[in-house]
Image 1 (cartoon, protein in one colour):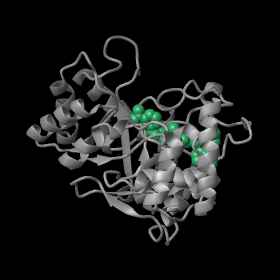
Image 2: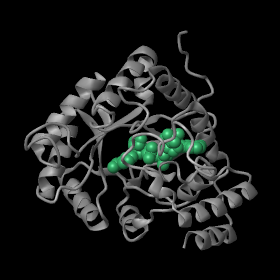
Image 3: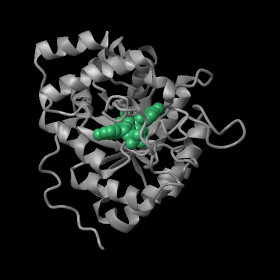
Image 4: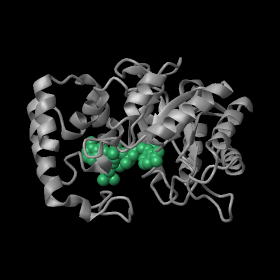
Amino acid sequence: MAYFASSTRYDQMKYNRCGNSGLLLPAVSLGLWHNFGGGGDYQIMKEILLRAFDLGITHFDLANNYGPPPGSAESNLKNVLQAELAQHRDELIISTKAGYLMWDGPYGEWGSRKYLMASLDQSLKRMELEYVDIFYSHRPDPETPLEETMMALHSAVQQGKALYVGISNYDAEQTSRAVDILESLGTPCLIHQPRYNMFDRWVEDGLLEVLEKRGVGCIPFSPLAQGLLTNRYLDGIPKGSRIDSESIFLGKDNLDPETMVKVKALNQHAEQRGQTLAQMALAWILEKKQITSVLIGASSVAQLEANVATVHKLEFTRDELAYIENILV
Ligand SMILES: NC(=O)c1ccc[n+]([C@@H]2O[C@H](COP(=O)([O-])OP(=O)(O)OC[C@H]3O[C@@H](n4cnc5c(N)ncnc54)[C@H](OP(=O)(O)O)[C@@H]3O)[C@@H](O)[C@H]2O)c1
């Protein structure tokens, strides 16, 4: 059946300004790291992407290596874009990144100009796009001068292959330097993509402050701690969940007793708020003024819909925040 985008797609979502830029991003964005690879069910991917668009999610986040195999998430996105969303390209913010291992030899990862430029060309080819909206340096490279990596991002914009640039996984000090270099080149740093959730709060130790001061947006990844901050594992490990899968990024070890005590207490409080734990975990991040969007993953339309509904209840009282803080310490 042909897809027609919902005429109410912009009615419910909230859009936040990305730092000091002119760009608005949806409060909830969708990442294609898991569940969009070569071995996945194309029909489900398509349904998730189209439902996301219908719910006002204008931002899809990718990287060269998303799959498996690496590159296949970009290829799958291409198929959905061409078949269903082609006429909506100007309504979409599509990002990709380069930084992790993509091909053999000394130029297949990290932060050299050689790698970044080649990787972006490959991503554009896989997605059959003329440009991406945001191109990221996926991780800082301790061996390559930061100037070279930032110059490559700047070149991507100058060559019309990216509209904006961002950095991911850079600490506060590296971020400060990257922002300076990009500013001097005339290509501002649009956004930072760090891991941030109730269980991993390293960004509160300086990074958020830098981003706010420098007018850079922030889009935390794994805001649900890959599913730990949901009701997914409250009664064990369900079939087909990320822990049940081959994922090397989340395992049984993550369900240690100390974590589960916190998850249960948080879940109880979320229920009292009239939200699911996932919704409360997302709202808790979005409540911070430096945050532009939360970058979620989803393995089903139902998860996506539930997570997007977060935007209906984002407020916390001081007492609630203190109560949550007590659970988390
Ligand atoms: N820049 C980087 O270095 C980096 C690194 C990692 C990720 N990212 C980006 O961040 C995106 C999101 O990362 P993530 O997938 O780890 O995010 P996440 O939102 O923390 O976790 C998503 C997973 O949690 C489970 N889930 C989601 N909503 C749920 C709900 N309502 N109820 C129950 N379970 C739910 C699903 O797992 P099940 O499979 O168990 O259903 C889902 O795949 C990625 O796609 C990628 O774009 C970036």
